[in-house]
Amino acid sequence: MRQLALQGAATLLVVSLAWPWFGMRGETLPWPETAFAIGGAALLLATLTRQPWWWKLIHLAFVPLAWLGSQVPLAPGWFFCIFLLLLLIYRGTLTGQAPLFLSNEATALALAEITADRPNMRFVDLGAGLGSVILPLARVRPDARLTGVENAPLVWAIGRLRTWGKPRCRWQWGDLRQADLRQSDVVYAFLSPLPMPDLWKKVCAEMPAGSLFISNSFAVPDVPATTVVEVGDRRQTRLYCYQR
Image (cartoon, rainbow, N blue to C red; front, side, top):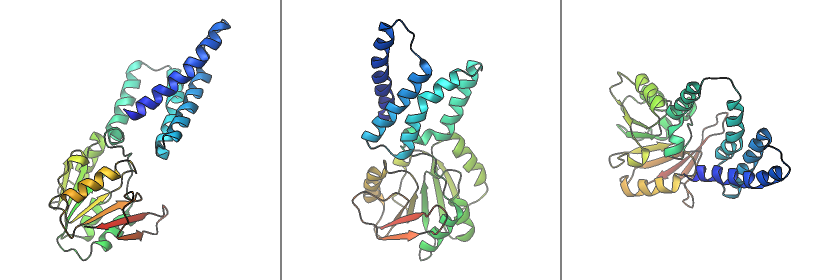
């Protein structure tokens, strides 16, 4: 809702300034220029409210792309299909304030090394995507019990198919905020800065003593990590590890 409010505020700001100006001159509102102006205003508001970089890009491009899309001679049903497809893939961006970030295999192998001293570990991946962590871990850690939690329908379905028939892999549909962490030895997340404070509260409330919480790229605000592991991949991935 916050992001929709930003878009609405940007639209209201630009239209309220442009409409009287062009109305007094007897001219119609130039929608291409107006759309790009709304995008610029939305970017400014997103910057002032300290939104993550990916939300800034979305705010900048949303209305201009919507206008460009309206110029394409497609039946309305196609636009609905495109919207539905995006919702099926990026639902987590709306409900969990986290875009679809996919961990690479180098990260999965680093996780295997970090957790090597935890035999038969119970591992939970919050926002598991396509299983890009669960599947490599299943290969190198056959002793581990692995759970992936995902709530984007199409992404969940693909991950479910990829983990089908792997007895130590559990693929779970659900909101990461509702996931049960009480029996977890290791919890991994690759989300965004926004949900980290609330997720940390959940970790502290549910994860048992001696367990390990690992966040890819996004540190918990105002909480020093026990260790920070440099993966050494092209992304220069950092894994922030918090011992409970």
